[in-house]
Every structure is written in structure tokens, then in C-alpha cells.
Length: 361
Ligand code: IPM
Ligand code: MG
Image 1 (spheres, rainbow, N blue to C red):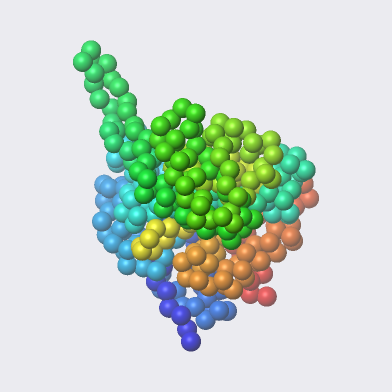
Image 2 (image 1 turned 120 degrees about the horizontal axis):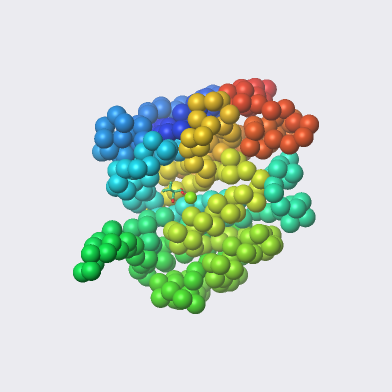
């Protein structure tokens, strides 16, 4: 029987529309193979939404996302909107989407593909075999804590304020997601914090430690965030699953991504309790190469695979896309960001065509 899914596409800004086009085509092809019918609906977010409506996340877009089985997002932001006040910037649209859908858990896998080891800036022996899952808390911490803003002090000086805050329940619910994820992987969880300085981290460490009693099969360790940044570069293979707060997760997931050679290869999933999940590449909108047919569409395509796996429970279709990606890389097809000597340099569209051809074979 054909399965029907309503998917909201949010192409956003910069290279977003180019890479989304490839992912949409891939989904359609794979849908035919696995008897899945996708009804795509498109909505505005980020700079594109600001230009059209004056707001980075129009209510109609959030409603459309709520009324779908899953959301596939490309990327937002660009120089054009950089000088707007923070609540009107494209980034506010993304944060509004995360908050509006209650997407508190962000899963960012960083797995090195054997075909791309030479694209990593680190030595082969350091990165070979790296397979890390960063579980980042996404709707709390310093991104959302109050008070926040730029205030004027009694002496007339301006003072910028953000607040890093976590409640016990916020820590425990992301902790649960991370322990469950570790359980399905190598059974090792490293919780990253700054408990030597920050009270919010002391509570974080305490609650994660307490929670570990429910997961005796998972080996828990703790690490300070500065050390974690260093260890990711020194010996990334010591990590299996990492759980951390919003800001530390933002930073460490970029570092983990780069171990794999290109941030252009990595997908992510943002999940909540009941609303549809949002699936998006870890990379940004790359305004410097937008519209030039140079972008790597593979992280977007792999985000679509993650959507099939986590939101729609279509493991076979997800596997099929992931295998297709490995196949084109194996053949030597590369976009500029992952190019190395002797490989075929392709643009975004040609990479999409190469992938579709291999999926149709
Ligand atoms: C990310 C991005 C976002 C974040 C920005 C664009 C708001 O860097 O998804 O990692 O900081 O969370
Ligand atoms: Mg980031």
C-alpha cells in the first residue's frame, strides 16, 4: 500500500534553494521505489521571509510546519540581513521554529566516510573510524534564558546581557534522549559542561549523573567544554555520544563536523515530544557561493534520509539514499568543498544528477 506523507520544505536563503531542489528530486525518485507518496508544500523562513513579509518566521509558515509529517529545512541567513536588530534577523526565524515546535533535542552525527578521509584537515590515523553523535539541547540555555537584551546602566553605559539557565526537567529530558541514543550506539555517553565555573553546569552534571542510574548499560563520563574542544582534535575516536547544552553544542558540533572533512556532508535532526521534527544540514547558507551552482547538496540529501529514518520510520528508503551517496563518492564525484586530487569536480546540479542516476540504476 502506498504511504502518503506531507512534507514542508523550507529552502530559506543563500544556497538553500539549490540544495533543496536536489533533495526534493531525490525524495521523489526514492518514493517511487519504496511506494511512498510525498505531498510537498513550501514555506518561507529567514531572509526570504523577511523580504516577502517583514518577518523571519511568518505565522503561516509555522502553521504549515505543524500541519505536516516532517519538515525539511535548508539554511537561513546572509550578509543582506546582518545589520537588522536581532529579533528581525533570519536567525530569529530558525530559533522561533525550534521554540514553536518544541524541538529540544538536536542530533548531529559526525561520521567520517572512508572515501573522504583525505579531505579532512587532520591526519588519517586521527580521523579514520570517527563516529560521533552530538546531542545538543536546542530550546534552552543561553539562547533563550532571561533576562536578555542590551540595557543602559545608571552611568549611561550600555550593557549586553544573556542568561544561561536550565531547569532540572530540561536537563533530564535531553539527558534521556542522549542515553537512549548512546544505548543504540557504542553505549558510551560523555556529558560536556563547565561545572568548574558555572552553577548551571553543576546542576547539569548532577542531574545527568542521577539519570545514569536508569541506564546502567551506558557508560557515562563528564568533561569540561574547553577540554572537550581539545580532545575532539587530539583524539576524536574516544567519543561515541556527546550530550551538552545549547551553546556548547553549537560550537562542538561544528568542530566535530569538520573532523569529517567537510561540514557540507553532515545532516541533523531536531526533535520534540509531539510536533513534527525538522531535518536540516549542519552547514549554513554560504552566501559567498549562492546561485553559482557550487554548493554541495549531499548534507541536504542526507538530511532527507535522516527524515525518512527518524520521522517517517522508513529505514529501507533511508539506507537506500545513504548507499547512493557513498556510491557517487566511491566513483570519484566531488563538489569543491570535498575535492581532492584525481577526483571529478561537479557543481551542485551535476552532483544531484549523478546521485539520481545511481539511485535509478
Ligand atoms: C546552528 C546555527 C544556528 C545556531 C544559528 C544560525 C542560529 O549556528 O544551527 O548551529 O546557533 O543554533
Ligand atoms: Mg551552529
